[in-house]
Length: 226
Image 1 (spheres, one colour):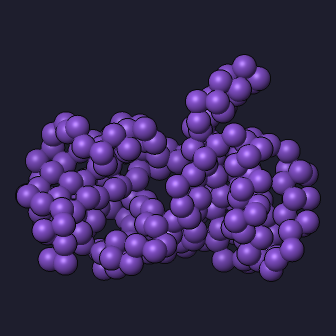
Image 2 (cartoon, rainbow, N blue to C red):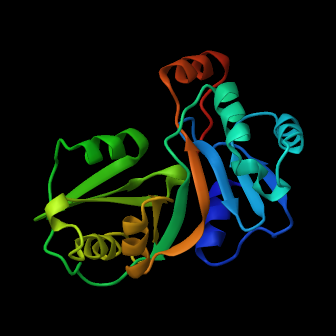
Image 3 (spheres, rainbow, N blue to C red):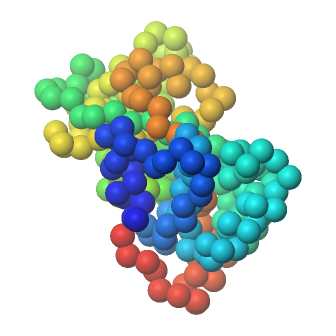
């Protein structure tokens, strides 16, 4: 099954069976690889040998239900793939909302660290700003709509994060859903997105390509299609 279909089902509240198993699917693109843990079921989207992945998981000395997010396994996976990561995120999703966003937003191109990061990991990135905040939406893992927000320190704890997260739901097509990743330790961000209607789906770790892994993959095999 393709990762896009799994994500589409999860957005609608239909999840893989909670049977403790691990499903390995192809990467949706050369850029996007990683580990997505649902309740008692993990999906690994990586172009690697499924038998090796299952054998490595089985050989870990830890709770089997936690094995795919165990730091030892993730370190092995990164070393083998030549990829890197930032952190394990809480993956959340929300449907589009009708009408204009509740915040006054100005769409504009900006040279901002949040924007540069979004453009390195997503396609078709669009940027909106409002006093004290920044909002980006782009096509990320498996082509899904993904949002990121940035709130200035002086504007924190004033509800701007929630307002930005809510506004983003008004900026995608009417039949679409919007995904967001929050670092599990970022309680402020988690609260903002959940209060804006984003529902937790699972935990996700995205494996980002490095220059070395890009070179190796380009020499060894063609880029998988979306």
